[in-house]
Length: 114
Length: 114
DNA sequence: TAGCTTGTTCGATGTTTGGCGAACATCGAA
DNA sequence: TTCGATGTTCGCCAAACATCGAACAAGCTA
Image 1: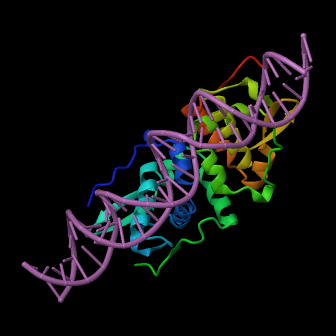
Image 2 (image 1 turned 90 degrees about the vertical axis):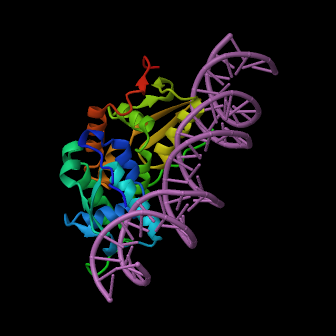
Image 3 (image 1 turned 180 degrees about the horizontal axis):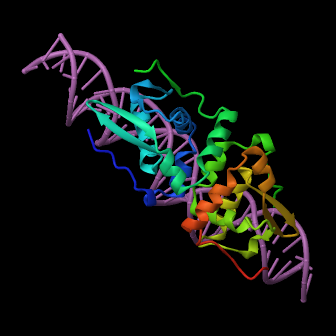
């Protein structure tokens, strides 16, 4: 398919991260990934077409928020928590907390782990 | 002109705040306002037309990030720091810190206080 | 009252975004 | 090798956004 481009630490821009987190679907995805585990695309349940989901995952990847790994035909995604923490210390936690208490992204869920 | 609408605490949405902070000009404005002082429009120096600046200030206001006060024909703006802290604890500081160290919004400045 | 200053609002424009379905590429399995 | 599963990419569209200049509104000030 394609070897996804992942920005280096110093290529991660604040505004890109903020923009990526300004969409409920993407916030929902980040919330799921906040468990620190790697998840397969297949597990992700969002109320959008798969092409749109692919798009959102690309936005997150390009912003440096997630990392994608490919294994055979399927992909796995994981939160770049440490990288984000290094680049923008203290940023992620409040966002996740706010999203949690607000229910932002609750429309996104996990299927029985695939 | 118009009596600006300011969202209540519980009307402030995370995604709106994130979206508002995904533009360098607006981040720059927030950085200026982070000194806690109230500033007049006139002091604000940004490389955009005044109508555009007005627009950005409206976005910040609508997102609940700033508060606008009118006095005669001129307006003053101030950061709703406490409100934001109440609504999204710990969110603003990391953003400001990241913006600072990144130089995001450095294009926005203050004129000799008007 | 006339004029100046200060913001806001109004098109107009070009870009970006979010969304879809369809077509394509890739790999594993039958 | 053919099929199915899994993502990506490709038009394509409507909506939103950033931007500008021009026109407008509202207060001061002379």
